[in-house]
Structure formats: C-alpha cells, structure tokens
Image (cartoon, rainbow, N blue to C red):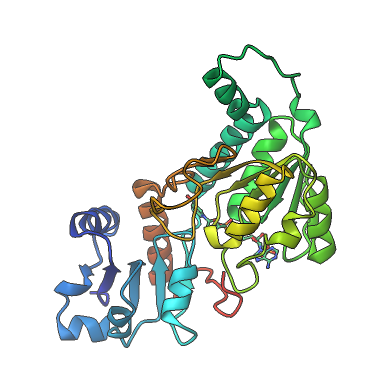
Length: 314
Ligand code: NAP
C-alpha cells in the first residue's frame, strides 16, 4: 500500500470532500485523506499533499512531503504563505482551463470591439447613435503573459482575425503571434495595443507593474482586460487613466480584495466592468483527472511532475 496522500484546504468541508471523492475515484489504489482526519502516522508518512489555499501550519505538520499539488493555476498565495523552504509545488495546468480562459478573453474582447459598454450607456440615454464598425483586423491585441493561458488566448484571438502581440519574461516564437519581451517589449506592447489583456502571474516583479507610468504609455483610447490578479494594476493609476480618457474601458475580473468591497469606486464607474472572478473557473472533473494522472505518473516513475520555480514566484 502506497503512503497516504493528504488533502489540505481551507475550502468548506463539502467542497473539499467533492474534490477528495472525485480524485479518489480515479485513484482507487491510493488513500487520500483530509488533513484533519489523518492519524499521527498518516501525517508523518504522507509524501504528497493536494492543496487549495491550505493553512500553512497544516502543511508544516507533514514533515515527509516530497511534493505538493495545487488545485489552482495561480500559486502566488501558496508561494508566499509556504515560503522558500516548502516542498516543490506542482500547479494546475489544465487544457480545459486554458480553453475556458481563451473563450473569456475572446468574449470580452468582442464586448469591447463591438462597443457594448457605449451602447449600454446610449440606451440609458435613449440615444439612437451608431458607431462605425471596427473589424477585428483593425483592433490590435496585446497579451501580457504568454504562458498556458496567455498562449491559448492569443491563438483564439488570432483565429478570430485579431492581430496579436504577446509579452513574456523570456524570448518566444509562436506562429502568428508577434512575441515581445523585456522592458523595450513592454513599452512597445503598451504603445501599440488597442486592447491589452493581462494574464501574468502575480510575483515580486509583476506586483504594481501597470502603474501610472506604464498606463501612461498606453495608446489613447485603449482598453484593458485584467483576468490575472488585481494587484498587478495600481488602482489610483487605473482610475486616473480612465478619468483622463487615455483608457476607454477596463474589464476587471480580479481585485486587490475579493469580494470587491462595497466602498470600491469600481462598482459604479462608467468606464469599468466588474466581474466576480469568473473568467476561468477550475473544472472539478478535468482538474481531478490532471491531478490523478500526475500522481499516477509519479508513483510509476518516481519523477515529480513539472514544478514551479519558487524563487521566480510562478
Ligand atoms: P504561466 O503558464 O506560468 O505563464 C505566465 C506567463 O507570464 C509566462 O509567459 C511568463 O513568461 C510571463 N511572465 C511571468 N513573469 C513575467 C515578468 N516579470 N515579465 C514578463 N512576463 C512574465 O501561467 P498561466 O497558467 O498562463 O496563468 C497566468 C495567471 O492567470 C495565473 O498566475 C493566475 O494568477 C491567473 N488566473 C486567473 C484566473 C481567473 O479566473 N481570473 C484563472 C486561472 C489563472 P515566460 O513564458 O518567459 O516564463
């Protein structure tokens, strides 16, 4: 019998059991035990923990951990709470999540390209006033982040006829996408994009990346879609950019504080569309299959699946 696998989360108990049951059904040979139900022996024997926003003290109570599987794609909170000494972390990389995110990016790109916020406002004023149609080929997209999600979104936009540039940390070459990197690449993508989409991880390098100076480099009348993390964009700079008209509209799915507090100026700002962190929800079934496959492969080969770089933060 393999050593037990811990499931450590701060989800409510019913949701945690749903995850446990789904993964356990795919791995009938494994013992997957919620942390609170583990005996002292189980805790000292566990070499794998499946986690979702775990209490770091629970993870620290598993001294034999060889690796940790996150149920989420974004791991900034896990990295900062577990610290540099944590066991290697495998994050969720799920093609279904990438598909859903790419669909969301395309949907909200159409929302902006077809001027839906403007027509909504005009309707409230009973104003019958058409805008000139802008075909996708004339709307340049800029993707900040060309990882699992950014690349899928970039491809989907390209298929829909939008010219796409992307920006990443390292140099890349992706068919049909103008790939940029480095500070000069950032300046270029900010200056040329009609719609800028943020799909960067939140790290020490990206926190506050879109500040007053960077937003000041945007093309006049550009729009922003932030589906990554709220803290990448500085709130006062975002509001100033909207109020001075450089930024025409911002679609925000992520915020410094979630749920967005009632006092937030974002709620009733005419230039902001607020979404409740729904752009790409994790799919229980497909994510469970990925987690189960990763664990099965580790049991068979002894090789830990690809882990994140804790020092880099993603
Ligand atoms: P990923 O595969 O790790 O890709 C990250 C991309 O960002 C890579 O292209 C990376 O460059 C680039 N990058 C990182 N730091 C950078 C820097 N300092 N300068 C320039 N580029 C940088 O991540 P992912 O799976 O695409 O996910 C991205 C983020 O989406 C997650 O971290 C999470 O926060 C967010 N997310 C949001 C939702 C939602 O519902 N709103 C759902 C899932 C995930 P390299 O390619 O050179 O490494």
